[in-house]
Amino acid sequence: GIWSEAPLDSAGIDFLIGDLDFVGKGYGLKLVNFLVEEAAKTGRFEHVVADPTLENFASIKLLEKAGFSAHPSGLYIKRLSELPWSYY
Image 1: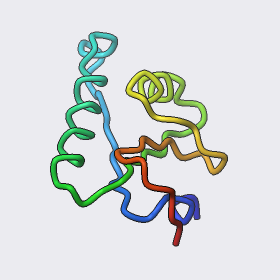
Image 2: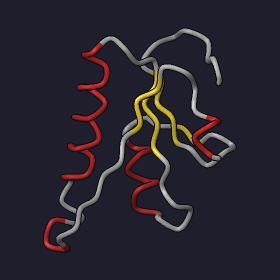
Image 3: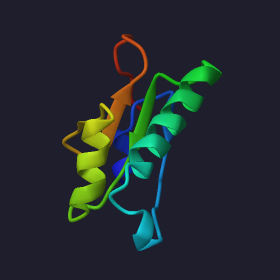
Image 4: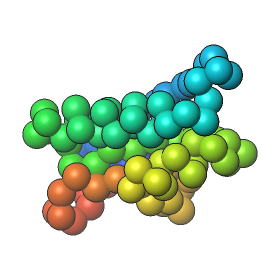
């Protein structure tokens, strides 16, 4: 599956802004940045990975704004270190 393309030592994140009153107010970016910071603080991860659906343009834009890059598999990956990627 798609997650077999995730680099080793990755933390996977997922997020949802369910209440429409909170959409478009910057909470998603704050949440993703918080999750990335918490993963980095552990010292256990070299990457943070998310897997938005292709039609979820808002999440993709948010991830790109937070520094994630699209991988050919469809995953969005943010590097926490400069070490080369290792795969399963």
